[in-house]
Length: 309
Image 1 (cartoon, rainbow, N blue to C red):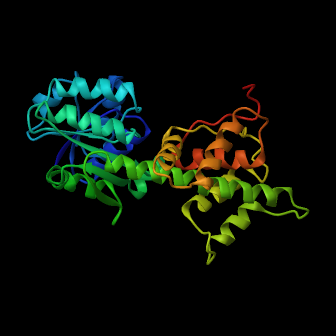
Image 2 (image 1 turned 30 degrees about the vertical axis):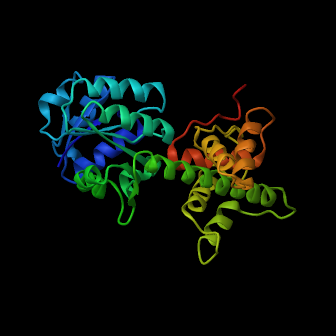
């Protein structure tokens, strides 16, 4: 199937490569054209990536109905790219937002796009920098008939059983928002547990503990695998990392939704507040673990122990 991808950052480029290797023809655009050109030149893509430059090329290169995935930062950048694409696409074409957008924004965008005769899907995506190899978990919202038309793409994008049509516009990003809120709580628990182990009277090999827990323990998970990787690479103290942990918005939105729905969510709420604290007080070992995990699964920014702020 032919699919467009606009925005070739960590996630967008990984999705483009995975789809090209699965045999789809990818029409790729990036604000810095050289990034798209380099992607198209990669031999492992088998010549199945075409550069779209300028943006209008999507309309001329692709056959209708067109499906264009956008993968850019949530907020103004997403609105701007959607508006630019809507101006060059044709009625019946679909824009798929694969960024970490707020589900309220996705509902608003769906209504605005559909008023122009276009279709819209919101696609929450998880998998980070490992998605190219392991597949991207995908949560989709929008009209079911548009999802079904797009399904051959998402089937190859995701691992087996790793995608779901969640409901009408906004449902995909809603499920992804809660997914990330849960992630906050899980990571905080691992961070605190390893902090206690690190402070104990015993000379424990934390990488070995993480690897052992992966075999038969009820707390085994991919995050624990990544914790083991981080300790093996950087040592027990994670000394090269500063305990500075960013939050990208979804945790805040999850807590706000919990309050709006009268649902008590103390673990997720406190995990979010701990991330705030990490940026305002001296770093703790648990925060180093969180920073290491975010870097391992998503390539998210970290600060070294020598950074001033």
